[in-house]
Amino acid sequence: MNYREIAKFLSGLIMGDFLVGVWLYMAGNDSINFIGIRISREVVPYWMLLDLVVFVFLVRFAWLGKSAKKKK
Image (cartoon, rainbow, N blue to C red; front, top):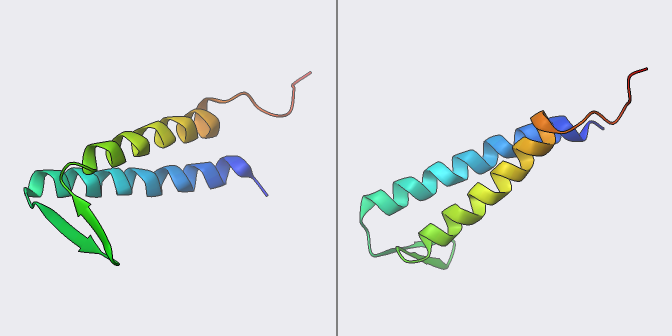
């Protein structure tokens, strides 16, 4: 199992989640219900910040991290 490829896939999912957060914040709605969870406009920036931190971690691991195998 190649963990870097999994991290690349998950970084795409997290970026999509971040863009949904941007969309919700720009929509101007006071709050919405999603699967029984109330998402208010005040919560969305924290959600986006968490997405950004996870995205940076995944990108660093997937594309910028050192290879596990050392070249001789």
